[in-house]
Length: 469
Ligand code: AMP
Image (cartoon, rainbow, N blue to C red; front, side, top):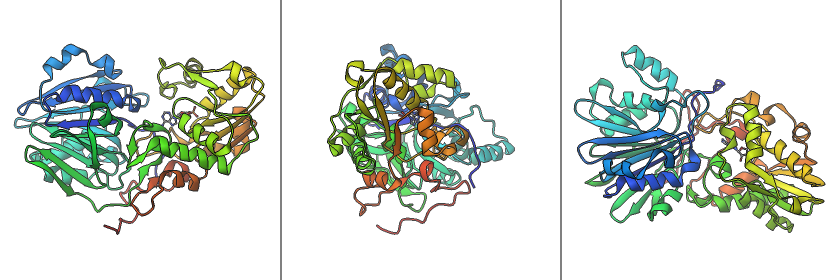
């Protein structure tokens, strides 16, 4: 049984570049493309071969970096991070990459995911005399790597990684090497790209497109990739598990132009919408989507149902994500600030409103209310993912079970709470079908927040290892 916890969940985006004279600038642009993965803080660490130089701060990438900063960040290798954090840990010291220096070498670490046994490892490390400076679980890995005064190498990183359990994508930079590692189930995304002779790694492929790099391959589950002047080498620190890519990357988190595990996000969302239309049709005049993440699935629903797709809601693009507001009151206010109905379109109409997911129900309730106030006669809510009833321990901020509306209410009750004329969710099979089209390649998804089947347990137990090539 997994303990209910509301620890530090980190959606986050990581980026790294090796062998390009404009290391810091490229990282800045890469982070910019992944801004949607975290708006709390951003940072870049550059190596010029001898030293690590850092620039980071709280806020958006554009707030943290000014043109003049790049003159101090010369170097051909860089690692960067955008950070999403839950309440209570927005401290500057948690902004990544985290940098650690010893007398002989330095190391910068950028991490996306969640280390489930971080507290336990923290206790062990403290018991052995380590003093940890942040509340971030990323620091635990740094201490494990440097334990017993070992040099930073494939061996020390492999030993350290084998002590941690969870979902993680790491990029580690030393003065002369860059390492990228992915958890044995490959729950979080991490890809390798090329830009001329340079190598690039990123959480999302949209960062490659931003800088003109081309996609090379995915970092594999349980793989540690080392990039240096000698080229690229790869080792396995764990038996390759069957891939369990986070379904929420497709449903909500990633940008539509990204390919996650070689599946385009927009295309997968369209298929979710199509499956949803097949499973749960509605007698209505039009289909609308909640901007931005539900537009693709709304287009898919409209296409499959034959109903016209309309722009019934617009988004004020200058307001941040409402979910990150700490209190319920602020969250409700946030929805109002962010979204507005297009009265002339929805008035007098029967609407199918598509949203990608329901977490607490705040967004759906406000939007249904908004549409009805604007004159919609019926609002049929269709959710392009299965209901979220279980907390995520792998780095997606889902909140505790108490706050998840679907964990505590039947579908009829949810309809009443959000004021909809009808509600339906996509089935688990429908979501799987939409994402995992080609079952011959070893793709698989983690739907733990929907099914309660956790592919990685707190004790490190994992679903059967992949037996194929
Ligand atoms: P809620 O209002 O709590 O039901 O949140 C649902 C809305 O938040 C949906 O419209 C999603 O687009 C979005 N959402 C879903 N999952 C997350 C997440 N992990 N972080 C931030 N927003 C999310």
